[in-house]
Length: 284
Image (cartoon, rainbow, N blue to C red; front, top):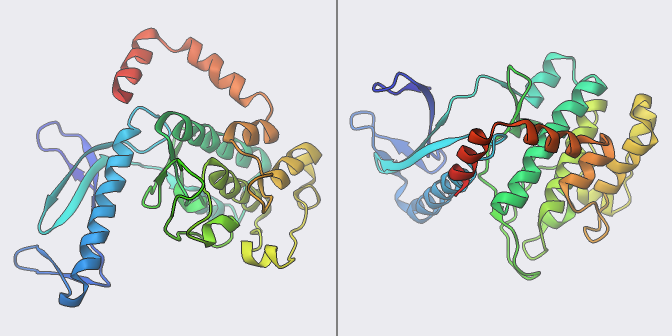
């Protein structure tokens, strides 16, 4: 947390400091990588700066943390972003005894899904690490998607290689291999798993166990107020074969909360023209 001495605005500064392979010189403040881990340190710093650039590409999307700038100093890298006062979905669940009331979970996940739809369609980015830890609930009820360290540009071919990045319980099967196609449907699986966990307090079995035959209990049975339609929407979003899984956030969100996209479009029509123009200029 820091304050801009010129404007008085409060920001958050994120520093690249991989403690497992580097240390800090307490006199100079310089980050010193271990001699035999120099290559790993530089690779990580490159990825860190790539994350900042990805976030800056999405500064016009309200549901994404806003990044002001990125820079290198002290033999490492930093980026400056808006300071968020909210709590993660995981923290909110913990405060409420391990799960959310159904209506509150629907509201949070729908807002996260709407933000992710914009990220996919407007920025051409998919997150690859959606979970309750990476969805921030703001004091006004809004939602921010955070932690884009695993994000990638949309695949341009079926053979595009990806690093193996995953969060057990939320990652679909394609994230367990480096040569399988990933895309918006990868985030759909993760958000459906997040929704299941948020309303039931139970996690979906990890994908490899599901591939071997481990099943999960229908959400309709665990949370009767969910109803068959929403339960089936979750099931379809959690299909192991990505070819048959729900492909877009729009389809998933409409499955658990019909009319959500229509409501967003209506809100957009009510937005003042000056605000629309400013948002468009930011995206440009």
